Length: 150
Image (cartoon, rainbow, N blue to C red; front, side):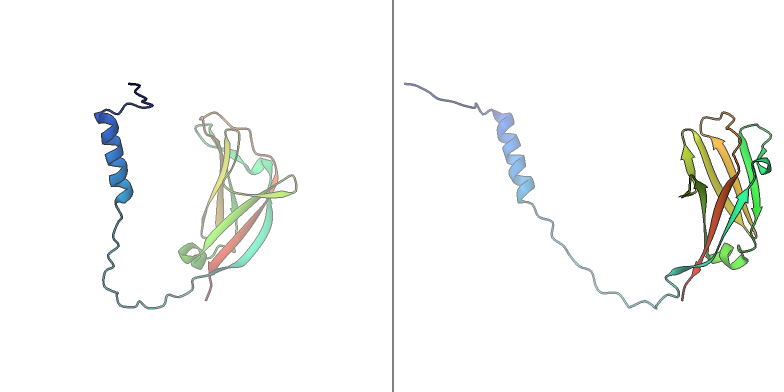
């Protein structure tokens, strides 16, 4: 008698087949909870560009910090009002080779980023590995102020 067997089953294989059937046969039953009360409509919801301006930061305006690891610069911006600080947003772009790049911007290990407060933008450039980065060159920046729409 000739016995043809392509695959020998052992208890491990039966266990795997049983698990396969269990997991494919299970279906999660969705149970919906009670419908809640409708909420009130919120205000705003959209933002719009309230103001935008282009300015330049000269290379000499960048100052190195006491640790000799971070270059810092500031720019007075009257378009950053208290309303913008409280409920708005500020985006800053840096011009490189006729293209605008949004901050934060990084190239190799050097990162340029910004923060803002009433009437002012603060910039820093640093090396992510803690080395002294190259002094930033003179560049154009664009600040865009977004406020809540109606």
